[in-house]
Image 1: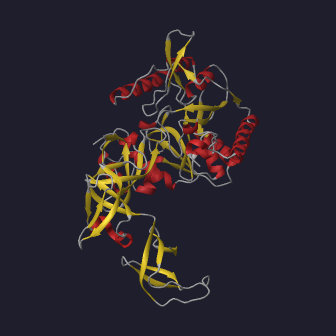
Image 2: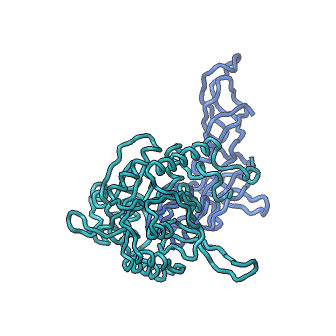
Image 3: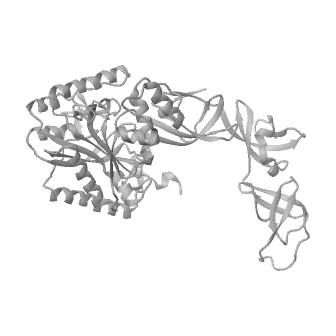
Length: 187
Length: 323
């Protein structure tokens, strides 16, 4: 893997720090009036999600992390692992609970998701920004004025619970924004 | 929408550029009223700055088309040239100079920027600090300024004496405040780290003065009230931004030569490029530099503060990526 010197650091660069792959969120050049320059970086640990700051001086070197994002199709969950397939290579990958986290709520079989691979292993998944899921449980719908405010919880096929307008009924398909977990519209 | 498509456009709004123009003329009026002469010295020099941590940009000069190439350097500050003028009897002078520093790019840095540098003959450091405050007050909304020594500002914020703390103490103070895994045996590296990461962000409208002699650059070395040698140097901070750096100027030609040589040696030791030393500055000082104080102020940063902008690119017509 490539190594980077501290003057090559930039946003989005993936490097190894303390044994974990990290991505650079913000790189700031700091130069005291007289004296050597520093590079102050905000980083996210791609395994733990922790965000923190670290400072490098000009001649430090960092090891690049073999991290890449690949679009894949979600296949199924076997009770323990979530299985995905790269539709170009037909290679399959199994992601564990740590990698999937709460995003299991937005995974519908055959949908596309972005899988972050580190040394070929899934460490994070990002569902599509919008997914369409069916309501399996909610209070009976209220007919009539759809513009009226008010909301109620609805459980979707994946187990996700979202706030929906009162007129939504069981069996309807909803469009959800996975970044906020909010109902957008009927699909 | 695409970045490429928009790249002809200025990075500053026309409104910001109008404010910039007003501020530049206010600065000129400030010095006209005080009978300080405007000068415009060369940007291109046969010599480069000696400072190990400032990198000069090199230009291929040909005195005849197709002739031999002579490497020349874009100035990183007009200091050497202005001091040569002072030695030649110019009296008080100022300059709004474009300067160039390789590798300095960021939110508050553009590799090409505007420096206001001025020298007042017969001024000591407190007199110059007052004049710097007057200039800043004339541009920014009024705010009371604090004057504090380098030692006191460290003691106040870190309970640490920067003059007497051991290398180990400085390192451990740094590790408490800043995550950094590198090693360095130079005390100034750790002092600079504490200053830039921890102290500076807390400083608003503050003059820090009386620096350790190791950070003197081209300032005179004097003594403080306790008899400790200090550099007659100050820095000004507003809203956590370093705005200006001033000295009671070194006038001793021999000492000047020694410092140029020391910088040169440090560059060699650090594996940095070495350039021709500006011996004409030493010769000028041998002829005689009048007792004076001088300061360099980042004009773009002053404008950022006046306009409440977070990035230097918002106050200059075209930042380096669009230049």
